[in-house]
Amino acid sequence: MNHLLLVPVLLPLICGALLMMASRSPLGLVRSLSTLSVLLLLACAIYLLPLANTGQIQVYALGNWSAPFGIVLVLDRLSALMLMVTALLAIFVTLYALRGDDQRGGYFHALLQFQLAGINGAFLTGDLFNLFVFFEILLIASYALLLHGLGPARIRAALHYVILNLIGSGLFLIAAGLFYGVAGTLNMVDLARFVAQAEGDQLLLLEAAGALLLLVFGLKAAFLPLHFWLPRAYASATAPVAALFAIMTKVGLYSILRFSTLVFGEQAGAASSLGSGVLWVLALLTMALAALGAFAANSLASLLAYLVLVSVGTLLAGIAVGSAEAISATLYYLIHSTWVIAGLFLLADIIAKQRGEFGSSFKVGPRLLNPHLLGGCFFLAAIAVAGLPPFSGFFGKVLLLQAVPAHAAWQLWPVVLVSGLVGVIGLSRAGSLLFWRHHNPSSPVPALDKTAFSIAALLLLSSPLLVVFAQPVISYSEAAAAQILDVQSYLQAMQLEEEL
Amino acid sequence: MELLVAIAIGVLTFSGVYLILRARTFSVALGLTLFSYAVNLFLFSMGRLHTGKPAVLSDATSYTDPVPQALVLTAIVIGFAMTAFVLILSLRAHTELGSDHVDGVEKPKLEPKQRKVKGQSNQSKRKRFGATR
Image 1 (cartoon, rainbow over the protein chains, first blue to last red):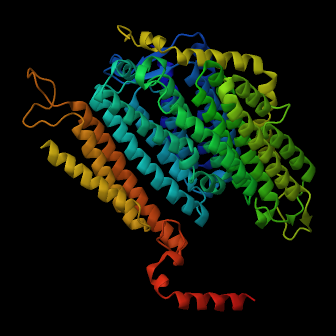
Image 2 (cartoon, rainbow over the protein chains, first blue to last red; image 1 turned 60 degrees about the vertical axis):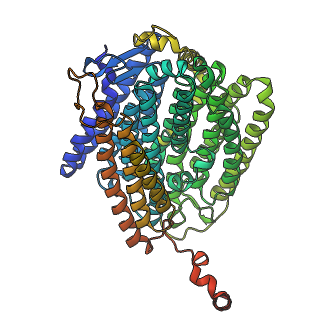
Image 3 (cartoon, rainbow over the protein chains, first blue to last red; image 1 turned 45 degrees about the vertical axis):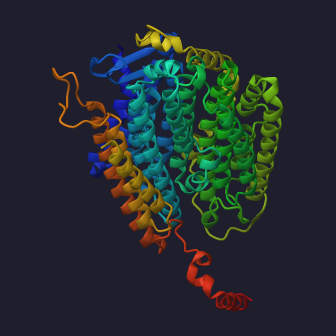
């Protein structure tokens, strides 16, 4: 047992608690503690990544209670990758927030740490009820973070977000209860073993529970009929919060991927690939409608929120296909979309600050102070996010398009390509309005915050870097996909292998 | 006993869902509370219903399952905290947005009163239209 598996959960929890208590101490102390925490988190993720890449699934039994009875943390390639994505994102979000956004309300840093604890926990846990608890931790923190800075728009968005997610939590509990009531276990690997043997009424109940879980994860991931909360919430959130929320939909997608491969995977017999047909259709519809939404958006922030939805649809399509190549492509696209969209949210905030009262809305506003720098950066980022060559968005989409089997390709190709095209039109409309059309400045705006800009630019730099280092990233994601499809290895890691 | 508990859960869920679908934040908060009660009862009953059995493992061959009880405790704590949060948020929304509608704005078209006096509302619309001109 490697005790370092606990660090990604415990470190932000402890730092969050300390930051709560230190809220009245000098600002410098609070900020440096928060920064130190995310740096340590990154160090931990860097340590865990090669550990997971050995191929050995690391299991940490809390309190040394062995697998089906106690709660376990599981580190495989997939969760190590997700930890890495989160840790790197957290650093940029924290550094950007230090440029003043953390002062727009209380407890920003403490809430950020709690949110990270919840996200990391959700990626690491191997227990269904534990997953519920970590979901709650990250959701409660996100409720407060969404409200950070207050204002009517945020409160209105938060009301929907909170109520919807509370209903989701109720459904999650029903699903967890059903699983326990039927299978007598909450350990995900043990559940996989049980589902593989279940038949008759038991199987029906388990499938009902699985469908409920899919609904709950879908609410987090925000695919088609469950996405209505997202555009308003993301568009109204403070920039660093919106950037951090780029990982939130991925938590839902991660859970769907985990459940569809582990519990309802190949070995599950009658229950295998539960709901993947529905997910496939929903993924395509999400992509198409989100692209239309991006086209109709009335501000840069809501345009980006719809681009988040497009990426959710793309990723969900990969998960619904479920082959090793498709999952590998999905993981690559997941890294890209998280970082690039987060970077774009930060860049949009910098642009909005230069437009004074016009903010990021698509109205002809004053001339920007640094139109060439911001415009150039926006242009490159738009290319990356829309999926045009030579950046990582293009690469991820090509991988995904290649990975789908021929009978599904004729459905996926047009949707991905047309939604990409519509996205490009939406982005170019936004760019031409923001950077080319203006009237004389009406009110003085603060000069460009060079540090904040370089933080956003560095995060966006991840896109070309993902192309340069595509080889190691893809070989890792291929290994991760192969690992999560091999359910037997999880049973062995938890010493539950007897019969399957 | 099973039937009674099942009916109780059903009635609670029904009332909860009905209230959640209302347009006012207070009824939604009440609905969420009822729904979480239903969920907690359901979770509790997943350990099967027993009376007069030891609560934890003992020499007895039959005992009540402690795991759902522990799960319910966790769920209750989280549920209470979230109910409090929703209430505070609704109050905040009411003061900040000036309305207790879940969308933060009134939708006069859907109000039954307005529908009855259609002619009047049309008139007032026309008036408003004229005023903007």
